[in-house]
Image 1 (cartoon, rainbow over the protein chains, first blue to last red):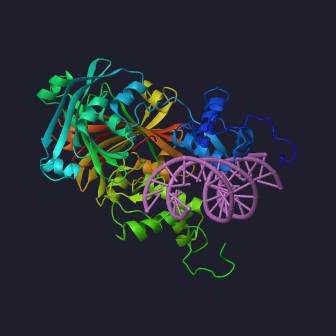
Image 2: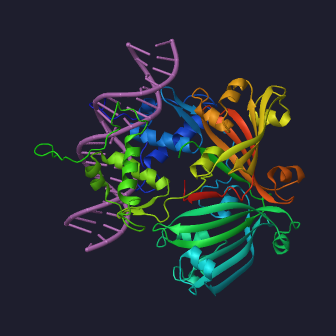
Length: 262
Length: 262
DNA sequence: AAGTGGTCTAGACCACCTG
DNA sequence: AGGTGGTCTAGACCACTTT
């Protein structure tokens, strides 16, 4: 087209300014630009159409594949809808999705991201031999050592969740985990590049507080809480944590965006 | 390339046999083939590597982009992990995730897919003017007519959930919905191509059965159930259903695969 | 060094929606 | 008819892992 003569001085979007290492991909960068330039800037409002893919290609000087990838992200993030033959429609940003239940992240991360202060109390570390249940959940032989970490999670200094994590000792160095622990066992393991932590399967159930739990969470006996039974796996599909969490729903809203198909 | 001399007689994967209209995309077709040929066929087992992307391109005679798209689907579906420089690793117990809580589908669909029989009882249809809460949830003026559909959902003839759906009357033709209703309001709307139903935001909370609910679900008073507060939106981000569901956890397990980032 | 996945480009053609 | 998104291809180059 036009590169015959000179390069346009248009602010072409590139991977990053410096040594091309910002962790950000080109599509992510384009997503960010689209959000800044059109969505949060209030240049467009809910129901309006984004510029067409072709226009965005010219604007940011990237290929259509890159623009399409960026648009897909915005769609999956719930910011726009896309209609064939029409365009990308800006959605109302009213709904927040406070804690994406489908995202693998720690309570500390969720709390911090939503502007709250996460804390830990009644922390205890134990090593026990695996019983039948632990053997099944962690897929290790009965009797193998298991690190048990239990604690009360505080949000803004109020009891919010009771958490017990079970880790196969052969996978983790107990003293190392202890040293790097800042409130979340999951975060320590997520940061460890050798463990290759990848995903978790959770099951959500309602639960009624019995006396010890009620006392711990400082709620009346009989209060309804959410129980999350979670197994975290590495990329090879081996269990690395079995976690049991009892959550006070007054401190944690569990929101979820559900989509067709997928 | 290689079409100069010999053509492979390999069974090139194409969009569909007939008039190219099966609704299935090429990447979806390739995904299906990969699952059939390598994962469920037990040719590979958990921890094994899929053939490389290049090999899959040759095998199915498609471009690398198509193969990568197929692989991404398998990843998002939780069937494989992918590691840079290594390959795609088959994950264990790939074949479950009974009720993906993150998927927009009806109770009937979930029940049927898991081999159960869905039923409906105590069905009632009403039209009421929107009060303040309905006005807020459905984003319509107070007083606007709202269709209220309540019923007991049965799974294998046992009470499993109490459901109330609220629909703005201006969006739906009540008699039409009634006529096409086969147990699920959501399914009727999902099938309607004019409504453009797109996604839902749900919030999950624990709930303790009071007397009327306990009686309806035939459970003891004080039983813990899950309460799902769900708003369904169309592609323009307009609410089309507000649904309230009380679920007996003994009939519905809510599983969720959680991934990093995303 | 060789092989793998990760990223990005350029271009072609199709399906859909709107005038 | 013309514009928009949807799909697929071919190829280039980079980053990562293994040998």
